[in-house]
Amino acid sequence: MKAFFSKNALIILAAGLGLGACGSDMDDLDQYINEIKARPGGRIEPLPEITPYEVFTYAADVEGIRSPFVPDSPQVASGPDDGGTRPDPERSREFLESFPLDSLRMVGTLELGGTNFGLVQTSDGLVHRVIPGNYMGQNDGRITAIRDSEIELIEIISDGIGGYLERDAAVALTD
Image 1 (cartoon, rainbow, N blue to C red):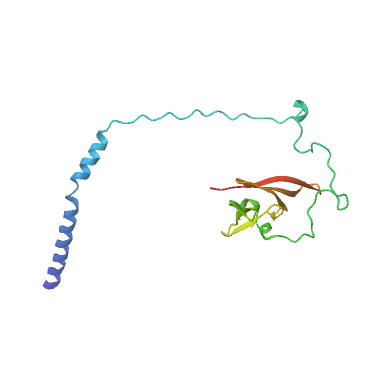
Image 2: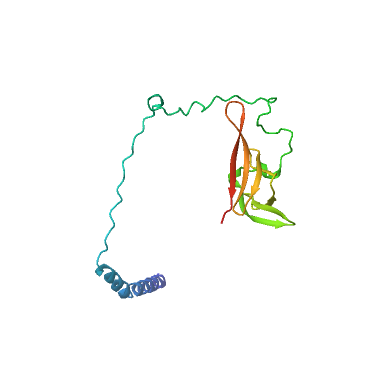
């Protein structure tokens, strides 16, 4: 029992000495804290003035504003035989048409053999070459021009009443 007691006493004594050494070298920290506290306080910028929200009550019949729920001009849905704008169901799909347009990034251009290619990176990191006439995006987006800073497209989208409309779109060069 005596050997057990002396062994435990030795461990307790070593721990006490070790912990006592940790607390003695705090003078430089205390001095630094006192220096920081002695500095004069800075000026706090006032909060920006918040402008109150202005309520807008829509009254198309009173102010002559067109209703957002009525088309500007009467629109007729383009049928399959009327020659209107519509996607070509017989055209084979290109690889870049499987990606949403906002997930594609233009990363540069390349001139090769007199042809100006656009370089497009997909979300999986692969870079593809495109030229005007290629398609990309999920809305039948046909590339019309490749510039140094963007790739211009014309997409064919549904107008919501059975027909289709052409819409300009672009994929800009990213830094």
